[in-house]
Amino acid sequence: MIISAPDSQITPKPEFEAPALANVKPRRIFLGGNFVFAHPAFFIAFGGGVGLSRFAPGTMATLLALSLFWLINQHLNPIQFLLLTGTMFVIGIWACGVTGKALGDHDHGGMVWDEIVAFLLVLFFTPQTLIWQAFAFLLFRLFDILKPPPIRYYDKKLRGGFGVMFDDLLAAFFTLLCLAVWKKFLI
Image (cartoon, rainbow, N blue to C red):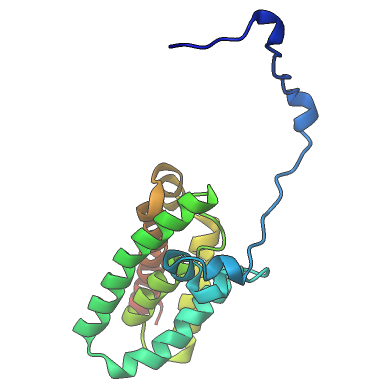
């Protein structure tokens, strides 16, 4: 059975005026600790809360990855380390996918698990000196922020948790490529 109202009771929705909205800047939503602890996926995707940083959350997460690397690298053999980062990558696909859907933003700036996992991988293949790690840090942040081709292409093309994780994996690859070229030809 279909119920309809007489035409006199239907009020049309006002139309939006595009020129009036052209000057409106989108508001960045700042989330709090309550959000991060509301679901395990949110906690993971936001790097345990590091993604809540109002100042450069991706950079803060990369620094966290450096600290984590110093803590765990000495306790794991290479196979264990790669298995751990692979597992973290798969968990990140799930966590970032769930969190992105909840926020209505597939790659919210506070989701920093991708930076943590990708930079752990960079550090695994980087010579274990502070100067090399600092250089790797700068290169990785450069690739992650600027997103040169093809990183930008995949960042725009791939959606969901895999897309969030994959563009940082590409940034890690190009970081390692630059480090290898530097080591091979300039030292």
